[in-house]
Length: 348
Length: 259
Image (tube, rainbow over all chains, first blue to last red; front, side, top):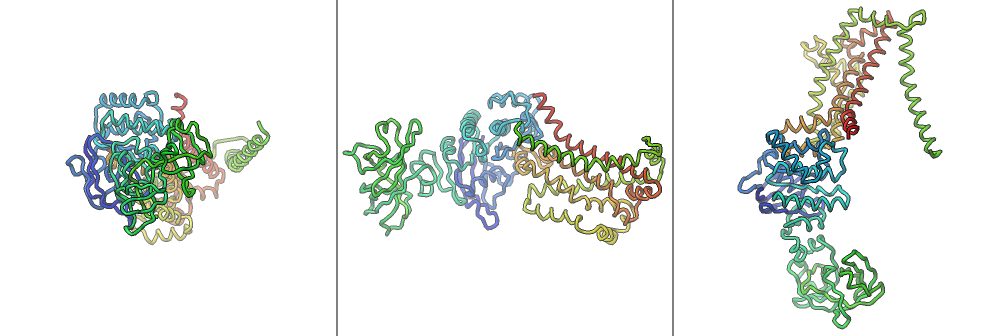
C-alpha cells in the first residue's frame, strides 16, 4: 500500500474543464471517497490516478515516486468499475487469476491466492461459473476480489455499487470496507451517493465543477460544511428566511451566530439560514423558541421525520427519535428550539 | 394455455413455417432438378461430372485461395480498426460505418473499372487483384459483424479492466477482447467466404476464371452439374453459418448442463 498524492492536476475535454488544479493527499491504508454530482470531475480524477486518462498538467505520486507518465499496467493498481467488467469468456476463477498471470506469479501461488480470496468474499462455490451465470452483486464481488488478489498499492473503486439494488448495495458496501481494512489497502472510492461516502470513508473529498471544495472526515463535512453548496449536497437542509442583525443572524426571532462559509453580501439584511433537521429540537412550550404544527409524521424505526408548519407557515423538516413523538399526532401544536448556536447563511 | 397465448404461438409458428418454406422450397426444387435423372431416380452423377471437369476444379481451387487471401486481408484491416474505433475514437464510428456502406451503392461495373485504373500493373496481372476488390465488396457485412461483436461487450471497460490488472496492450487485446468478439470475427470470416464463393460481376469484369464464372459457363452446356454445385455450395455455406452460431453457445451450454 502507498500514499497517493495528486498535485495541481488539471484536465480539459475540449472546452469543458473536467479538473482544475486539484490537490489531494491520501494516506497509507486510508479509504477516501470523492463525492460530487455527475460531471464534477471525480471519475476523471480516479482515472488519472489509474493512468487510464492522462492529466493535461500536474503530477501523481505513489509515495515519493512520480507515476504521472507511467502506464496503467505498471502502476500496480486494482480497479473496480461501475459497469460489470468481468471478462465474459472467463470463469470467476480465471477472472481472478488474470492479474496474477500478468504479474508472473507461479502456479502454486496463483492457486493459493485465488483460493484465499474466494473464501474472503464467500464465493468459493461460484469459482467455475461464467459472469452471465452470476448475479450483479456476485459479479461486483468477484471484480473486487480480482482487484484485491494482486495486492495492489492502490485500490480504485469507480462507483462500483451504482448498478446494484439497494439491499445488495449496502451489503457490498460493508464488504468493501471490511476487505479494505483487512488488507489495509489505500483506497480511492468515487461515488455520487453521499450516504455511501459518509458511511464507508475515513475522509471524504467533496467535488464540484472540477474542483475539490472540501476534504475532511465525514463528521466534519456534515457538521461544518465549507459552504452552502456542500451543506445542501450533504444530507437534508431546511432553508428558512433570516435577518442579519449586526454580526448575528435572527431566525424566527432567535439570535444565532453566523457560521464560517456563509455566502452573502455584507450589505444584505434578508438572507436564508440553513438548518439541519436534527438541529430543530422538540421542547416543552415553556422552553420553546417558537412553535409549530405537525403536518406529517414518517416513522423510520429508531427515528421519525416530521413535517412542521413553523412561524409564517414556513415548512420545516425535523428529525427526532421515535420515542419523543409517541404522544404526538398530526395536527398537534409543538414547541421547537434550534439546537445549534451557529448556522450557515446564504443569499436569499 | 390461454386462447390469446395459443393464438400468438400459432401465429409465430405459421410465420416460421412460411419462412422455412420460402427458403427451403427453391433449394428442394434445385436439388430435384440437379440430382434427378431422366428415369426419375436420384443420382450423384452431376457431382461426379463436376469433379472430372478440370477447369471447374481449378476455378474452385483459385476461388478458395482468393477466399483465404480476402479473409486474411479483411481481418488484418478490420479487427484493429474496429478495436481502435471502440477504444479510442468512438465518435468516428458513424463515419466509418457510412464508408463501409459505399460498396453497396456504387455499381460493380464502376468499381471494377475503378480497380482496373487504380491498381498497379503487377497486381492487375494476377488474380490477387480480386482479393483487394472482394475485401472492399465484403466491407458492409464484415465490418458490421465485427462492430456488433465489439458493441455487445463494452470493449472499452474490458480493455481498461485488463490494463488496470497489469496487462500490456497486446495481452489485453489477445486475452480480454478477441475471445469475446470471436463469434463476430467468425461471422465476418464466413460471410466473406460466402461472398467470394458467389461473386460473379468483378471476376467477370476483371477476366478471371473463378468458380462462379466457370459455373455460369458450365451451366450453359450442362445445367444439372451447375445447379448441383450451386446447391452443394449453398448447403456448405449454410452449414458453416449454423456452425458459427452454435459455436458461441456451446461452451456456456456445457457449463449450464454441468452446473
